[in-house]
Length: 455
View 1: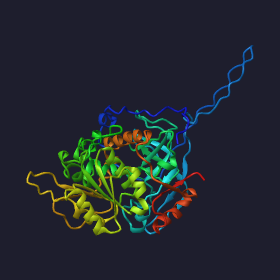
View 2 (view 1 turned 90 degrees about the vertical axis):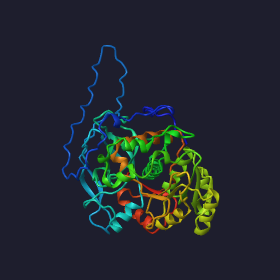
View 3 (view 1 turned 180 degrees about the horizontal axis):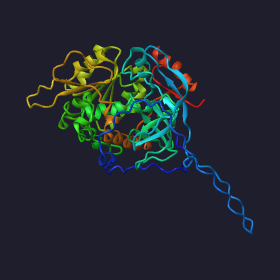
View 4 (view 1 turned 60 degrees about the vertical axis):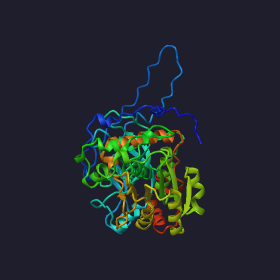
């Protein structure tokens, strides 16, 4: 549904045949180190003085009604409500009078969080102690909201812009979603078109970034060579334009050594996605189709088949009989499947690896590439390279993050990427624990839970 034209400035889109030159390339590509949690409060800023009333003239004129413009009002709050995790295996604690996070770099902006999108990692991290930063910490990866402070550096964002943001830098409490105000690097934010609601956009971010990095870096897919839609980035080139030592050591091999550009997925290639009905799987199906690939979605066909066909999947294979699914994929691809994405776990990743091509061709053609979003098989498979998504590249390499966000703005504006189905949970920050319980017990299967913070 398209709303009436907003008086706010329109999206500054790049024409489909233009090459977007990120300011990240012109500036230093080495990001600042993640700052530690700052316990000090910010100093309040003085508000702008009220406008003076115009002096009356001899001829009495109609008075103008002065309307406050939110884009020009100065932000002067110093404290907020947050959710804090104090220890593993505990619930998040609603905490008041916490400091508004400070901006540390010229490309950071402050965003009023309006809607939070929940992810499985939000409950798995505290329950199993996965990837927890120094405690107490603030969690949450997906958010949508409004810009209240703009970056010091030249930016495509202005006060009042409606945006969605993705916090992949989970060790920086300032950027987490479970708080009323969050810091967002401008190269990790997407400005929303008028017809996309914050509730619809909030759960999209992590899924989109994970799918795009899996296809663009791990599989070497060049989104600039699309068969339809706006021109996207070449993520493998973008990340390899960064100095190797500027990236964290745990993603250097994936970004520089795991696939050659000549081996990358191209239009006409088959890709099999096991678990294609997940949020990341849905994004991957749509992005792969924009690049001209032929997509096999291995899913619960009875439950999710219609939705996958709408997203463009070429073939649906029922995962409820795994052995049969393997045989069908082998038959369709004639044993030459080179690209696979698994969204479910190690067991399904192992099954998918068994389908993949051995790559031992006489002409020495490239190997097969399998990406596991939640795990990869323990045992190697002949001719198959295993990949893990280098999620940190999104925030550590501005050229990667900004290239993706500029492209996402165009995809959303042209309705070329569908947002996930959602279920809205009530209660604001205090309602997040109950919503996460529903993810824990598996009572929500399909829609993504979003939590508006204003109740």
